Image (tube, rainbow, N blue to C red; front, side):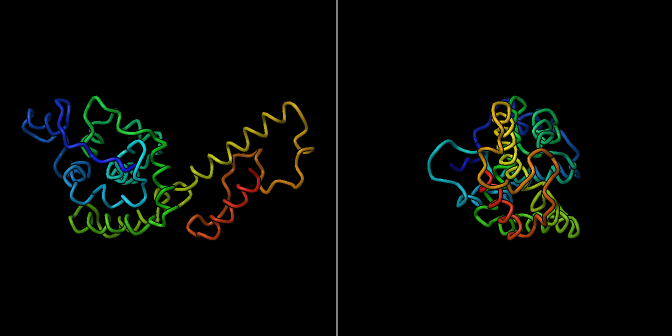
Length: 222
């Protein structure tokens, strides 16, 4: 279910702390402060159609989108993004996360990317946000194009986590069964992929046909 940004304030909210200090906690000309002032661009409603209408609320997509941009800006992994959202004051300012909250689990980033890919919104909603951010002066033209072409959005880094989870599950299953019996005696056909290596599949991750082919191969092997 779609999670939304909470509007109720707390004593540990960044805005409250900045009011006490009577000055921003990060420089006003920084990328982090710019993101903190752009809630009119990063709206949860843009992604409402990729979530169900019941269940436990998700991490607000407005926060995840900001985190993806911060990932690109700081060149960090999903796990490091989780750590920075928890410990880095600059990220807390940009994401609007109170000091006492962790922000999000790193797996929320890959799940969000998978939602965008599944609902074919991997470019449309993100482009709308980037264009608005560019118009507001948060991003230069060249930077926004790099983000759309980068691994954080459509490349291997953006979707490989979902594929890697499947590969790892198959690999663990093979290893567990292999300790008891010869796995080859169970297989009617050879596996499509080699699960004894951690090498990333060499495909064009921006090509939907190649992604679907790999997903079908993983599905058959599973």
